[in-house]
Image (cartoon, each protein chain N blue to C red):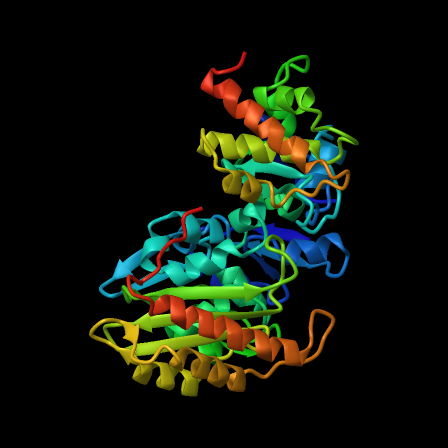
Length: 161
Length: 290
């Protein structure tokens, strides 16, 4: 169809071939690069389930034109956890606190919480609420998510093992 | 379909001349929604992400020139938040962190929704929109740039390079009503700028007209109502009258988000509160910390 292009995903250069150039980064990650961790919820930037980092900025991958993201460093939820058996501290906190119900919103929330804790080691309640305000959970799991953020903060502070 | 990644403004203009039907892509928060939904299938896309000039801002004496590619997140977090607090206030109400990291001030102008959050602030500040095209560069006052709902004075091969806004050192406010705090399109919004140097009060109204509206009578009234030596209102009751004059400048409609009557009421209340806060002892209120 069109010329191939190269994306750098989780530190690896990946070539995208035979793709329509209007495809979103979310579509390319899931359907062409075998990275289904980012979820496709609304495809309009409302739900946050497809959150990834592009050059260190948390964005909705559904709103990134994949072919325009050449030369950027893309990190997906799979890139947080290079060894598939290992959870990150944030993922472990989500499990421990029961912040996962159906799980569809979880990858996006995990990305958002990593982004928050990478910027702020001691977030206020308001900062936590604002940081996850772009991630919709329809299992009404926000209370558990707040608990998970608190637990992850405590782990990073070295208070809890 | 072709995706072009120019690196200079000249290259963007050349690409616009060569491919007049190409869509221009900034943060993607509007265009990609339409592409994903199949509402548009552009023949070509000119992506602005790699144009260095658009991603930067600079100070020119008592003004700032903010590149079109500067994101809401940058307006909110960087030194810009101190210099133009009104834009930081407005940016913080946009979408979510993910949207603010992607969406740009130039994209807000290009889409020119009557609800675009940065736009009333630009009206209140008396900003100009900086454009580049085949015939060179030009500046347009913000109030001339937006010509209708999602319509602008942008020429066919032109590109928005940025905005030029004053650094006033005075209080700036942006207040917005919506159905919730995050991820919400303004039902009504008010931007206010109190410029102690020029003794000028600027007002911009969002979602209450086909374009973001100024409120010249309300502005003149407020400028007379302020004791400029102290920055406070001579008579605090003037704030209410200010709200009434702002409401009179609104031109709202009934639609799926709200009613004209509610919107007119809302801008009166928002304007009154904004002026009270801006003129409270101890203002300017620059608190925008995220």
